[in-house]
Image 1 (cartoon, rainbow over the protein chains, first blue to last red):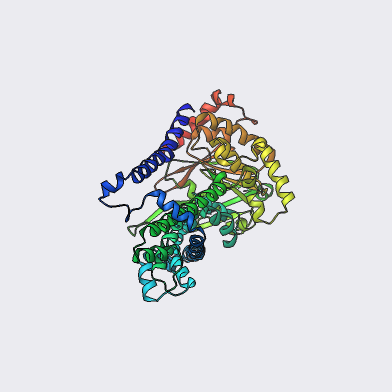
Image 2: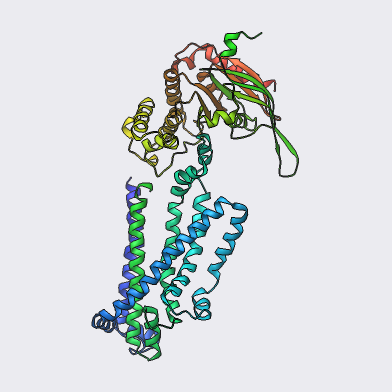
Amino acid sequence: MAVKSISKRRSSVQSVVLPLIFGAALITAWQTGLLHILLNTDEYVLPYPTRIITIISENTDKIMVNVWASVQVAVLGLLLGSLLGYLIAIFAATFPKFGSGGLTIVSAFNAIHWTKDVSSEAEVRSTFAKIIVVTVVSMASMSVNAYRGLTELPVFSDDLMKTYAAGRLTEFTKLRLPNSVPYIFTALRVSVPGSVISALVSEYFAEYVIGVGRQIRENILIAQYSTAWAYIVTACIVGIVMYAILMVIEALVMKKRK
Amino acid sequence: MIGAKEKNNIEIMLDNVGMTYDAADGKKVQALTSVTMDIHKGEFISLLGPSGCGKTTLLRIIADLLQPTSGKVLIGGETPKEARLKRKYGMVFQSAVLYDWRTVIKNIELPLEIIHESKAERRERAVKMLDLVGLSEFADHYPRQLSGGMQQRVGIARALALQPEILLMDEPFSALDEFTREKLHIDLLKIWRKTNKTIIFVTHNISESVFLSDRVCVLSPHPGRLSAVIDIDLPRPRAMEIRDTPEFTALVSKVRNSFEGV
């Protein structure tokens, strides 16, 4: 028991305290100018953290408008992609002969630079088009992981359902669906950061000048590096908040299963 | 000549049952050949044999989880498929197969949910089954919070929840330690006495089969076949102490010797 407690404490030190120390050291080095010396740059290209915070606080309303536009794209694309990915996984698990081939094609989507190719080639104009880019990115991760959850069942569990003369729908709702829940979260851990990144990059190529990604690009183009950095920091915060929300939901849902 | 009364008492009839697999190299592998036997209502039968003798294959054929390539199986006059669809048997596997997202009581309620039993009836029967296996105070626990022996008792309770006529048990205690196993032997005999089910118990443990059974069916490998059926005429109810008696030891030797001629 004591050994377990010590091991748990060591694990929390490694996963929480060490990254915090590293982050604090980095910010200190940044604020004191040490980082500029190490990277051989200046405060114009790499503004001090206090300067970035000042810009964020002075432009909160404008930043929030762009954050909202990006979050809409990321969240809607994530939900749509995850739903489609799960449906593909169900199809692949139900019809393994056709499904497994289809799944291979979908998983290959991950290798394509959708955010760049689709956005530019299709001349993305609207929020809807940007959502499609995020959808495609999120879909691959969900379909592959959910398929594992729907097919990698505890040993003898499908035999058990057969002994109860359970139909396919019953087997799905009582066994396969609940078995796939941890795999859904595995997929989301990949696709939540992926959705934020793909939403930001799809905005680079969009016609409408809105969204955090687009603001980063616009400000770099006009050499407003401080403002660009303010949006970069905002983008990081958006990603961290979305991931934290996922962690909280996962902890609540999986609480009884761990 | 079988008497009419004895014939009416037959629960499971195996007639020349055989099973041949197609191996990966294209060759035919005979897992089971010409198994013929009758199992009576309320009887406790053990299928005993070394690995690869076809005992689990035979149990799975009875359960309609495998189709025999020859011979016939009748369960209460019906095919295994008809018996399965009518949920005439409950099955306990080598592992407890409890769903970790369900509490103990919800695991026991699972088969009752599948047959759309009312919520009140489900709960009442699950509580009764939990009481039967002596785990009432663990109703709201999750499987991971139970020991291996307790998990297997939940598996037995779940198998009995549908009130089947037959209980099929595939090496249910093989993964447990000796102390837990001996305790579960006593528990299982108590449950059997209370419920009067027909039990087919697969094991590779000679002592276990002698302690539990009315008859031990010895299966031999290459190819799997029924090589001996030994009546266990030890008095019931049986307690742990019976293992120390000369009669028990003699029966264990008799079963062991039946392998020697294989």
